[in-house]
Length: 474
Image (spheres, rainbow, N blue to C red):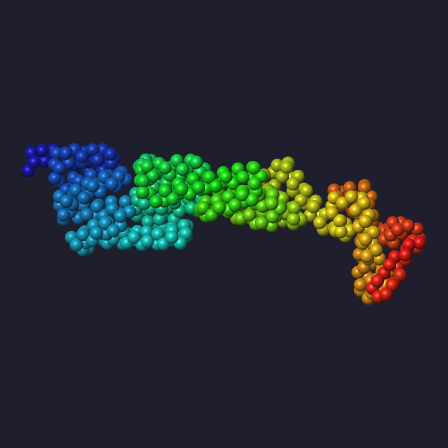
């Protein structure tokens, strides 16, 4: 017997008192003193392991519990603690072996039976999470890791997988907080550094992200994911910058190609890809490929439905393609999100254009451009009025006559408005809509026609064979 065994026992007893009071730091100190005197006593190591477990220091606790069973292979509580430490650290296979050893020593040990079930549950969750991760079902993988972490609260591997999934789900603050917790305990953890970088990368802070990836690779040079992410981040940054440069220089074709290549680099980077789609949409609108521009903006919005710039760009394309209802919807969304004067004005303009689009389009009726000159308007009226004049269609069916008469009337109406600078200005600005229209009540298309072509009976239609007409002017 060691001459100071009594002293060691006394330290152990004091440790037990502090342990019962839940003062684990003091208990740890006394158990350590007992071990210093008697380094071959299994139960001292067992007690200190239990204390370390209560302090959440599972790695150290694992060392003590392993030492306790090395000293006494039949020490049931030692094997139980070793298993519990393995399980807490996420090593369910090793934990199972320890619990099986307990059951060899004591086949009725209910704690070991329960812990064995817990260990196999952890193995199962781990397996499912890996499959889910491969299938990109990140939400389910997070669920599995949360379940596994209930039994393995100190497992960095599970926490990292969870954090990576959270980052891939766009839940960056949660992912950052998991990674930061690990880095507080282990500042050189390459996985945690990688996840911090991943969050920054997905939030489009690419330069900062690269610094974290490089740091992770310094800690673990063969970290495949960090290596891949670092490569992607650098490539994405370079391509995007080249695209922006080409755009500023007015080389839209090249900008389009560069943005397209950048979009192929990493489908997981939602924020950057949303910007790339919007940028490419801008390029397409410059190239007058408006439908493609709309598609690009729609893809940007699918990735990030808070992306104001994409809504504004798409709304402008809708305006340019006369899809006013869609434009109004986009401008409404923008104005609800950011109630600025400018956004209010854009919405008002779109609403006005929508109203204008629902009335008769006099330019279309005459077949002229909105910027047509007075002369062009006259020429167009001459051509259309003669084309639709009722006399020209006197031999046609009643249905055709009715249709042509309607067109003749519309042509006259259009000419009345567009040939009068004041009325035209009010029509163009949409004022006519606010003033109950351009009162066309006493309108007579024949009077307009006569006025245009000269005095009463200034011309007549004569048939010169079937379907041929010539005009005779008096």
